[in-house]
Image (tube, rainbow, N blue to C red):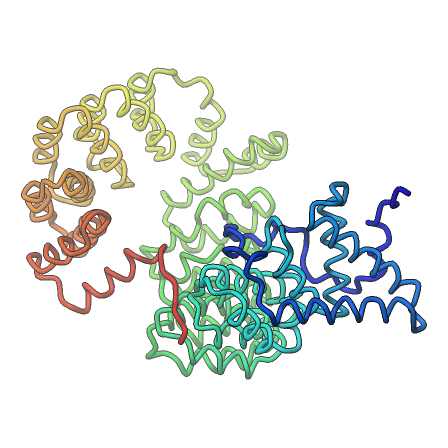
Amino acid sequence: MKTPTLAPLWRGLIAGAVIGSAGTFGVIKLGQPANAGAHASEQDQAASAESEQREHEAAETGADAPDNRRLTEGIQQLRRWSEGRNSTLQEMERTEILKAWAEQDPLGALAFIQSAPRYPDRNDALAIPLSVLCRNRPADALRWMRDNLPREKDRSYLVNAIISELHMTHPAETLELVETSGLSVGAYRYSQILAYLAKQQPAQAQAAFTRLPAQTQSQVVDDYLYAWAEGQPSEALAWVESQRNQSFYTEATRGLLRAYLDRTPAELGELVRRLQPSSETIHNLNSSDDPAKLDILAQYLPADQRAALFDYGVRYRFQHYPEQIAAVAQRYLSDDQRRQFLTGGFSDWLNSDQPAALAWMRRQSDPELLRMLQNAIDNDQLPDAPAERLAVLETRTFDNDKISEALSQLSSEDPAQAAAWISRHCDKLQSPYLSSMVMTSYLERDAEAAASWVASLPAGAIKDDALQTAAAHWASENELAFANANLAAISNPQRRTLAQFSVFRQLQVTNAAAAEEWAHTQGISPETLASWQALAGENNRTIHID
């Protein structure tokens, strides 16, 4: 007799599903435990036998007997499938049966999976009952893994899978599992757990944060403070104010500021007044499109750094609040900066709502701004050839975006011509990175000519940026003498330090010891070297908790 499709039967049995379908944990799958079926422990076999007995007893008794019978039938089909005697049982059906089983008897489900003759993606299946177990008894879940999974990579996979499943609903239990597991867990996982623990049990989250290594604290504190401030803004603010001497203070400030961007302008203003965040912290925020909040952030930046606050995001949102954002720009930007910003916002606006953008343009009374806006409209009439386009653009008020686009194309086609153009306009260039872009192409095409060109540039940011690019290039070619010569020619000490770090990072990719030795020859202090090593390895960090 053909067994009916099982999937509809299990949905009513699973109140609050534990884990989605196999393979959705967002981590790389590991192989099934070695010889899982052939070497099932006697303990597993005994648990499996006890589980089978409970299945039959439950199927015959209780008010939920019909549901129990359906579950028992499903388990029997799952057993036959694992033995290769039921090829029609689909993955979704297997998962739903396993979820229902795990809710009633997680240890029995674990014993079955572990001892099954075959179970593709066995670790994904194990994660289902282990997550149920961890919701109430993290120690039991960990003990089972230690007793039954000899390979550390299997235990690590399952701990990460449980974190993915439970960190939002059971962050405290998930944290207990992680802290007692002794396994390497990425800082991102701690960030997930602490963010939700801060919303549910702030005091416990605070205690957990203090137990983290300093390096991990810096990595997770931004998201942790953001979550904490959503529920307890006053407490989060008071704590951050008490941490001014900590290495993670800047990151903590950023997390708090991000949370306060969703609050009133008055609250944001009070926060900025009390914390006095660095210019870098404010720049790194995804600035609000609320003009009042933009105004507050601009107040606390040095005058020479305010233009950076009006980044692409604000420029793009200009079309939603043109008069208000223009008024903020009027208060804080120089005339040239204001015109450049408004022209950029106007260009974006033209693409999405040309009639409204043109109507706004006609209301402007600044002749120079009107000319720039008109140039933005005529942009599609510029020559296609980059050299010809630059020849036209240099007759107008300097438009950094259009010049950058044309120079990028010209440097790919003829870097020598692009370099010559920069040499003629060093006094007008607003973005030093343009020389870096050209230098990159020039070095690939004719390194000797590129060296002569950079030597001919006048001292300043344009030359320093090109020299930094050259130093990194020669470091990648293991030509340290050339790299050092370019570093020594950089006139700005801060820019030279930044360039030294670029070279160090390039060297460390292939030989960390050589990179450290080179840093000593540059007179880099031990403190700065330690900071560089941390930054260079940031993307590959994992934290080990004993």
